[in-house]
Length: 214
Image 1: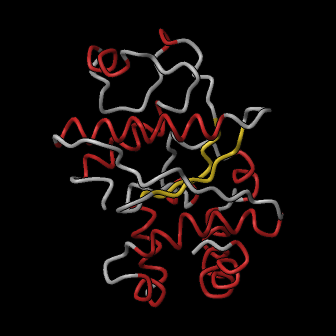
Image 2: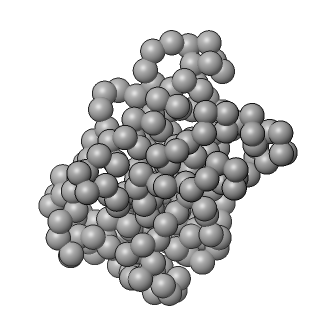
């Protein structure tokens, strides 16, 4: 089942990725933002104190019935990621239920996670999440996107706002993203695109098999 009914619901999910990534999410954050006319912005108000994030969100892509995140754990005991995921999924479920008069959990069971342990896989997961998955949403589908790689890449990085690809393609800077290690490795947008193309045509099938991503 889709995790959204209208496009505004995906914007609300981006809202959650930013505001729920905090140990100190304010109880009245929506009211506070509305009072200042900032409810359509992703800003952390000074009056809320330090944001103190639970995780570093290094990459994401929102799909019709699920979403992909590349997260860096910040808690020494490994509690940041599960706390963050619980906050995001509960907030989005509540939002959908309230707005569309529905009940129950929106997501089918616990989130699925893969720990990326090999250096050889680490950067490749960025291409998988941001390029491969966004290409699946390209008008005409994944195969057409591969045939029209340059055109599809431009569409994915400039016209599909629900992915962090634009941040690494040099098109924007989202406050949701903390590039962390990816910022070091993907500093050149042209090189990122070159390696993304190589990944799609040379590495994708092998990586999916190695990490059991499908």
